[in-house]
Image (cartoon, rainbow, N blue to C red):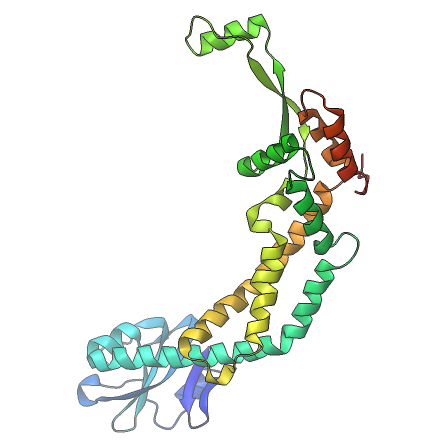
Length: 307
């Protein structure tokens, strides 16, 4: 990739021959006889090209096109530029990279501005439907609320989220033999009674939907919609360099955020079924008909789920 600074601004050049064919270009320039004028381009290749300085010619893949004060041109790598032309070259190279980044930022952000409507449509598509993000978020909010769902179940789900595991266990009272084994393992003569053992009781699938990093309001509203609203009001052509970088970094997160939201909705659909969540009733111990009824009331409207 070759970029030249022309009277039309920074432009992309198709091939290396377009550079070497320029009238003033020299492939064998003696740096002792010439002073640096300015950096007029940058290149980045997969294949190596030779440095244009007569006492170097080191092959490299990344470098700059420079003009001398006599109007001649050549190509040099970053290290050669600093070695032969000193601080002036370093400062010019830094400014050229900044100018190039600024141009790329503005072009990319204008492309994004044009694509905003399509992105908003994708967000609404994710939200909509009987089992879209809007439905998933609402049901998860209820499932987390101990005022709507038994505390024993909300605590269990919180623990699963902390452990990042959907493995469900149920405590049972240990037998005398098991207590003796536990005491031996702890190098104690005896343990107080009763002791309890957690036994596997199934797996709650789709628990990932409840992870903080998969929160659908944070993903779709905070990270996307609220930012889109602000971005629509900025003047891309007048944005200072710092803000160009900030919006460009945000642009690069959009697809990942949408993918994460899509996966979160999928996890939510897996989690929020009667068959998947019903085993949590075993965490209501001792049995409590009123609490069981409360959870059954939450489960009732959910899809039945596959066997």
